[in-house]
Amino acid sequence: MSTNDAVAYFQKGEAHYQNGNYRAAIDNFTKYIDFVADSVIGNSQEEALKSIVWCCRGAAYCEIGEYDNAIDDFSKAINLAGKRDMDNKDILVKAYLDRAHIYRKNRNIDNAIRDIRSVLGLDPDNAAAKEFLAIAQNMQVAKNQFLDSASKLNVNQPRQQSAPQSLDTAQNVVEQVIDTRQNARQALTIAEYFKRASTYCNRGDYDNAIDEYTAVIKFDPNNVDAYVGRGSAYVGRGNDGDYDRCISDCNMAMRLDPNNAKAYFFRGSAYSKIDANDQAIADYNYGIRLDPNNASVYFSRSCVYTKQGKYDLAIKDCDQAIRLDPNNVIAYIGRGVLYCDKKNRPDLAINDFNVVLRINPSNALAKLWLEKALQKL
Image (cartoon, rainbow, N blue to C red; front, side, top):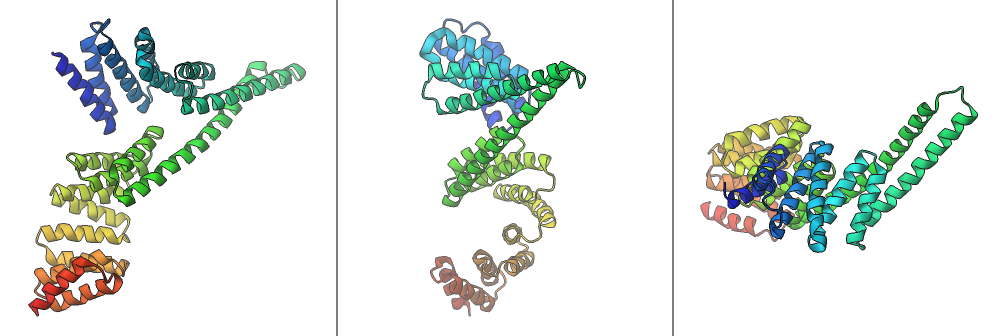
């Protein structure tokens, strides 16, 4: 295996990680790590890359809940990157932060605080580390207060329960309080990510929308709405590979929630874009059974029927979309085009285009097709 092959494993691992295929990501990162072994020692660039790969594999282990393996990888990254002093500051900051979060998950607050202080030693202005440290220190104080109270309770009332039992009870109470506060903070953060993602999608800025949904998934790997939202953004962006990425995200959403109608809708859209029309129709059909009142999906299915030459079914779907949403401009235009271009009914097409122009007098597409329909009379 050449050095280029090893780097290719790293790149494949990153791609798998971004697509949520964490086991595949771990396998590729491991192949890179096994290949370079100890041969990189003394080469600053290779040491830095190996430290990054350990961080990446640690992050993938986190996603599947293998926290001991993650801690081991972050520790290796820290040990190797730390040998070169401040040259690898960014790597060290990431590794310490990620390891601190795992310690927090494992309720090892002392180690978490120690790692965060290491971050601040490298980057004194790191806002995330400052916020984390404040929360962790408050947790530590609260925990000590609960444990102290429980200990005193046992001294004064020894018959009620043994000291270890009271200490365990106090520990559990503290952990529940900590988890509740942390979950509330996380919920607020996730809500803000969703809000920004929605704004970006409305602007057509799908790159940033995808970044926001990805951030939610890192917070909460089981967030169905984030996978569905990112899948929709991939369809909107439509770059090479994006439709496959949408299908992958929708598949994950379906595994988490088999009755999520939107996952079927967006996977159907992705299948339609790659001309897998039968699969698209199957997804639209199942999605409509789950949510029969989504007008846009009927129109989407009508577009696939049109590609298949099933014009009567396409018109029927436009009819339903209009019944559900009487101001659905795109459904009127779609039906009007079918009447004009495929069914030789320019009179019905004219009616549809006139409705569109009453709703939106400046609609250029309706004006264009209205002229064509009038010429066919």
